[in-house]
Image 1 (cartoon, protein in one colour):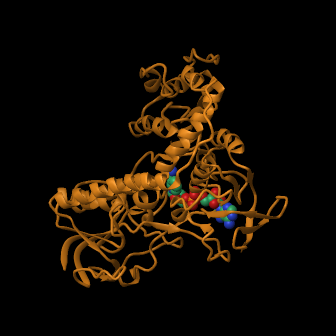
Image 2 (image 1 turned 60 degrees about the vertical axis):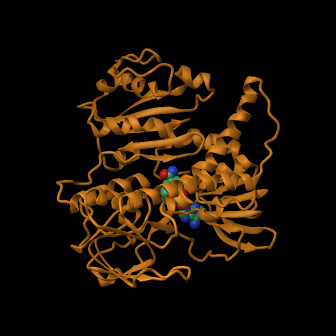
Image 3 (image 1 turned 30 degrees about the horizontal axis):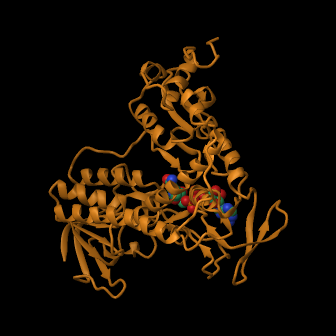
Length: 471
Ligand code: NAD
């Protein structure tokens, strides 16, 4: 087989690249070892986790109504029905992608691929299903092979009770107790799901706070809320050993935790992901890989090999689907000869917990690390009519801006719906808005989106919803 463009990987980076390339007139073959398009994000990541978080949100909101005098009974959970409903979401979306590929005449090949050279992929059989040919020659290849969960060195336990995110999303049961190792995105999102369904969730995090790297003022309200949702949160703690007891797993903790040995119905290990760059025989190409396994790319996502580009998780942090999609489009436009570069001012990140945390652009911690002059403009949601009406006053909205020009450089939001609210901030940062632009933009009342305008008014001495006149 031969093609003009081979795309290796069918996730949000790979399929976006393949589809745009076809729209621009290229002949495209997309190779993935999975039977269905969508990658980790759609098949066992972003989308199934959001389907389950949707359920968790419904349960939490029903409980919350007790504050307003409305009482429901304990939820009756039919796990099989929930799994089937989640599967339907995935089936619909992956089916849609298959149709979109067919309409564009993107040829889909199911195979595990490795590089034989800078212009040839070897196609290997998966699950006994042979590809149409054992080689695919290409003019260019876009590598979009994604990432895989990391494990804790010396702590691999072949036991079905110890799960990674893939197994946890299958929702095999609702264990009476769940130990979550890693207080990052996955641990907290899936911990939220299992806690809502009735598990007693314990989180162990090796650093001194949940979501390391995220500004502490954003994490604080979430931490406080999680303390009421979870059985325990152990910081500065590692799991030293796990022992399979058959009906449960015994964990030994290394940290300021008592008792040091505790038993759990199941364990979820979510300690990060690593780029999928080994097992591709990249040594047969001129592609270079850094010490962490990320493929090194330039602003057009070209690798050191003139025939190969790389996008998404395999090409560097942050390992987020929307970054992959945009990189995919940049790579394809670059191949089409368009003068493009991947230089975003802001890549949004969202942790879909309750409350959600979202940020974009420069964070306060990064600004401090870089020794960069900055100021913050903060609006606490306690002064928001909409937040009061919804009983969600724990949130806050924060701009990070340049004190001299008053241009916005970053934004952080914690609160219900923060993941949707951050989009306005991304646009403002990309367009180089100043505080005044945001303050003069009329936001609808009563909404939480007003918090973005009001926060910008604070340093200008124009915020009338709180008392902080300009000195
Ligand atoms: P993560 O990097 O977000 O969090 C891992 C956490 O585990 C960190 O807090 C780390 O300090 C801790 N840790 C590491 N080793 C440990 C140990 N031995 N004991 C205790 N704690 C330990 O990783 P993740 O949650 O596995 O998610 C992986 C990636 O997937 C994320 O970086 C993100 O890019 C992506 N993701 C994104 C979303 C989203 O956008 N909402 C959701 C899920 C995953």
